[in-house]
Length: 132
Image (cartoon, rainbow, N blue to C red; front, side):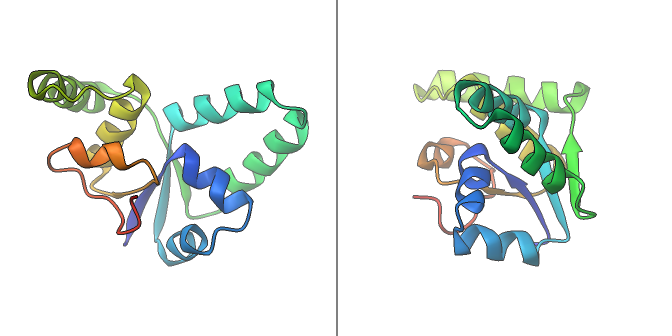
């Protein structure tokens, strides 16, 4: 997997030593972090007891030369609209943040690294083989 988008649950898994996620990270040329994932992480940090330490660890991760941040732009918004509409019509709605993360994955031509199996409902989304 050349380019990956790291989902929130897999960032958390990486932080506790998940070997599968670690292997995906070290083999990737580019690790994309969606601003939506960052928002979920920051919200989670605020809800915990180690906010500062978690933010510092995330800052170190984001400073790695292979890590890039995906901002929401016109193309990701268009893909989001298509994906959300398709999911609604097929009767398989997903959490709104996950639709944005999928849009970012598709926009960047990457593979999604996530343990959330509901991503399988999105046609055309490339995901890693460990999606539960």
